[in-house]
Length: 88
Image (cartoon, rainbow, N blue to C red; front, side, top):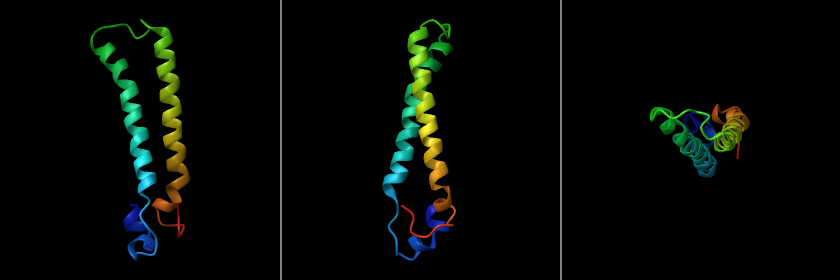
């Protein structure tokens, strides 16, 4: 979307924001890596609240990572849609 909708990138005036997209993929990867033990435990038949402290820490981490990803997406959405020239 970024390349297609941003005429500054298409014309070569601005560079493609690789750091932004690497950060968004990193957030997504951290989200899945933190959720994997919870899903594996449930699939193995373990109770979700078998380890309440670890579960609370994982849910807090998942919430922070998801919120960070959503705020980054929300902040950059005008750039993705091509509404603001010269985005970071």
